[in-house]
Length: 256
Length: 209
Ligand SMILES: Nc1ncnc2c1ncn2[C@@H]1O[C@H](COP(=O)(O)OP(=O)(O)OP(=O)(O)O)[C@@H](O)[C@H]1O
Ligand SMILES: [Mg+2]
Image (tube, rainbow over all chains, first blue to last red; front, side, top):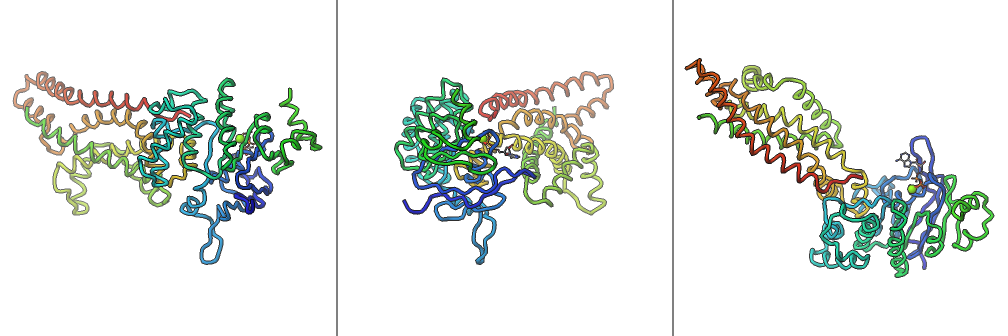
C-alpha cells in the first residue's frame, strides 16, 4: 500500500508537569483499521485528539498524507501551524466523540448538511441529498426533522457518525463511542461501525473497551501503557498469548 | 398625555444602542488582543461601578465643559448614558453565555473542519444567544424604567410632564403619579410579553453536555 496515511514520529504530550505520552511512533496505512486499548488514563484519547488538532503535541511530528500537521514551512523554516494550515491538513479526518457533541440547535438533517455546505462549499441540494442518504444508511431516515434532544443515545451516536461520514473523510477516529450508552443501545452503534469498516475505504482508529468488537474488525491492535505503545499486533497476537504481563492482567479484567 | 413619544423614542434608541454595545464589548472581552480585552474590561467595570444618574450628568453637563465635547442634544446624552450603562451589564451576559457553551461543541465543529469564524457563527453564537434571551428580556424592562431619568436633564418625557402637572395642582399629585405609573406599566406590557417569548425560545436547543 505504499506510504502510510498517518505517521506519528516520536510524539510526546505533557499536561503541565505530567508527561502522558512518552514517544509514540505509529504508522497507519491507507484503509487500515486499528483498535487502541489500554487502561484508563493511559492516553488513548489524547493520541487521537492530537490527530484531530484538538490537542497540540509537546514535541514530535504527526504527518498526514505526507503533510506535517502541526508545523508548516515558512521561509525555509518549520514554524508552528496556523489555523489555515491546520484546516488544509485535517480536512480528510473525521471524529466521533464519546458524548456525541451533536449541535442541539439544529435538526438531525441540519447537523449533517451544515459542514458540507459551509466548509466544503458543496451546493445545498446535493449536500441535503447526501445527508438524507447517509442518515437513511444509519437507520434514521424517519428522524430528519427531529432535534437531538428527542433521540436516544444510540440514535444520537448514529447521527454523529452520519455527520462525520458526509464529509467523506479518509481517516475516521472513534473515541469510546459506545461507553456513554445504555448497554442495550451499544449493539446498534457497533453495527453501523462494522458496516463502514467492511466497506473498507477509510482508515479507522478506534479507541475502545469492547474487546470482542476490536478483535472482530481490527487489522491491528495497539496496547497503550505507561505512555508508550507497549504491545501491538494482529488481534490474534494481542488477544492470544501475549508475553506482556501488564497486557495479560489488563485483558483478564474483560474476560470475566 | 404628552411625553410618551419621548419616552418611547429614548427607549427604542437605548435598546438598539445598548444591545449593540453589549455585543461589541462582549466580543472584545473575548478577543485575543490583550489591550482590547483590558480596555473593554475597564469600561465595563467603570460603568457598572458608578450610578447611571452620575453617568448621565457627566455626559450631559461635565463633558461639554471639560473637553469642549458636546453631544449635541439631550436626546443623545440620555440614550448614550443608558446604552453605555446597560451595555456594560449586558456585555457580561454576552461573554458569559458564549463561554458557557459546552466545549464539546467547539471540538465537534473543529472535527468538521470549520474555521474559528464558522464555529462562532454556526455553532457557538446561535446557542449562546438562546442563553442570553431571558436575561436580555429582563434588561428591556429595566431600560424602560431607566428612561425616566432623562427628565433630570430636562427632557420632556412622561415623568417630566407628570411633574409639571403636579406642580400646577398639588392636590392632584396622587392621581397624576398613578397615571404615570399606569403609563409605564402599559409600556412594559409588550416588553414583558416579549421576555416570556424569549424565555420560551431559549428553552429549546441549548447544549447541556
Ligand atoms: N486537558 C487536560 N488537562 C490536564 N490533564 C489531562 C487533560 N486531558 C487529559 N489529561 C490527563 O492525561 C491522561 C491521559 O488522558 P486520556 O484522556 O488520553 O486517557 P484515556 O486513555 O483516554 O483514558 P480513559 O480510558 O479514561 O478515557 C489522564 O491522566 C488525564 O487526566
Ligand atoms: Mg479516553
